Image 1 (cartoon, rainbow, N blue to C red):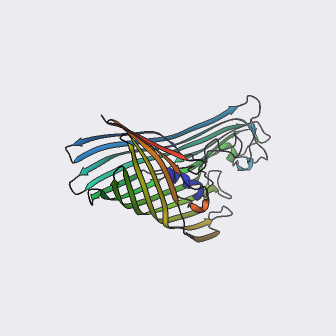
Image 2 (spheres, one colour; image 1 turned 135 degrees about the vertical axis):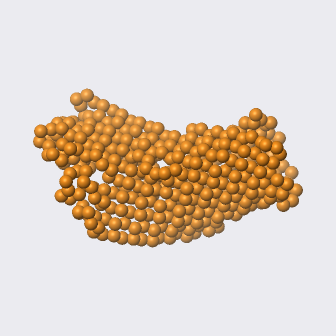
Length: 406
């Protein structure tokens, strides 16, 4: 449930943060890549449940997703490469900077833990679930530079760390039998996610020709991004069982409110030192989306232990509204120089997804597999569609789950 907010980083960040893996193309290995925030991969999902009588069941579920990549290289007395942007160094002014060693780490994670409750009555069934979610980002880049005319030694460090609060998710489903073969199902899900981060810069230099400010070095937070998302979904549908077939038709309403508040900071013009900062830019972007999807699916029980499934979903209505406001201090004196605002709206978004799968069922073990597909044509999907990553006709994604009863 947290993949959409990781995917929104590239679309909303005004600080240049990207939703990329460490080894994605672009730039040299020794250049700073700490602003790449990777989407964690699901590593473990566990659930426990117990029944109390014929009506009440309780459970506990947990999920863990992580991403941990690193890249390092050192050349004793030699050069690894030249920094692509030596002008980004704050402590000294050089036209080129030779890296002799570097170390890059990219870490992101998601942990969810929550209880579930189910009540089965004669006229209805209720399932409820709530989860506490912890998101994490811990990226770093460290490098040493070869002696230059300006300095004898230089050690550089940049980091991007999680700076948000806890997240949560809640789900509720109610099922009411209509006839012996048909059942009405109504469900809803509410989520609040916080993937806020802060970017820090540290530089230390030695050498006889350095000024007092350069010798003091650089150690400050130069960027803060507050990124939050509040998506919600609701669905109502009818399940009908006829012989070996199970058919479902439903309609829902989905929405999301995403906001990114980005603050960039630079040393003050004529300030007391390199760590005397002013706010150089502030950008606030808000995205509100709403859609009404139509869903239909079928399940065929080929054997007592094998079930085949197909589900298709497409929007009847889809719209996105993006509001952006920005303020800039162009000369670094601590006062605002320019400001702007804009509002854009997109209608007729036709998000749709197609799933094919099968399920194996025994007395104790259940195994479900789904292949997720969506068109690769961008006209058929909004920028914040919550389909699985890389789920296209040419590159599908697979979802699987195993249930064991004891």
